Image 1 (cartoon, rainbow, N blue to C red):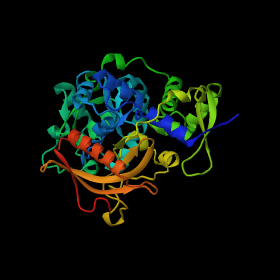
Image 2: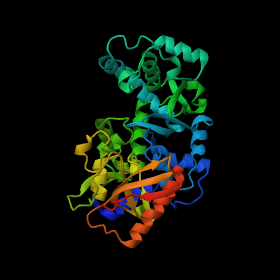
Image 3: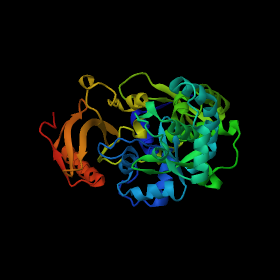
Image 4: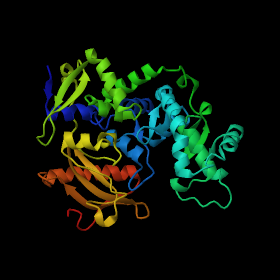
Length: 396
């Protein structure tokens, strides 16, 4: 028997799984932060700082007592977190490192061919020299070993040593020991990741089981494609085979979409429906989400569950942008109610709000606008600026 899950229940479950239903002002300790990241699975890292860097804003959205120094300590001193790739560069619990070793081995098989097409023959010329330099001298920034005269031009024009550093990081031989002005500091993995997180070796079967099981736990309900995409560690075929092999542990549920389309068959653990009452409703306050927030990473899932279409328009030519370069989604309770374009002006110490767009049917009531301004004040304090400035025409 297939059970229907209402759209409101589906949103309630997913928001709780995403850490967006917990009290946002409950004191968050360093250990609590580690637990939060473990429950989310990963926190994406991005360099853009229109208001605040993505990883900091993602965590602040969930708890407004979040402290950046706790994240730095967990990454750079305790070794409890590490940086690597899911679908993009992310911060992950070091307890997951043994599973990422399978990704490293896979990368070694495909990356040389891929990078040879991208970089050209001889791209690995500086590999041995770079490895020996780090092994001998310790942690290093790419700029410290750049050849004289090389003009960097972003990822498409890495100098040979930078290419080597990135190759050894992607394949697990180097790890990120910290960052300086957001530039990676590379070192040997064994000097960054504590020994207890590098062992034991995990079989391929156990790796696939972990990847699928942990993804479904964090999603609550999912298709095999969504299970595969969560970590970007296993293929859709491997996820589908895992579902088939574990049917006795799973239940099929139909997820009611937001916009009245046909319910979507998904999988959940067998006790899922009996535990629905365990998931609290999201707080009614408004929260500004990072464009890289894990809640909206899967754009298709976001549109199905919330009726909210979103894309980042960074790479869209300005005349073709529908909204703006870097526009933030707005979450109110369990609804995505709109988006907002704003930027922190650190010279003037202001958070400049350029434009607000509310979704159809969402009214700009006095109470809603008060809740929005309260959130903007909180975000301004977090970003380290003194006041919010609502620019002319911000209401559209």
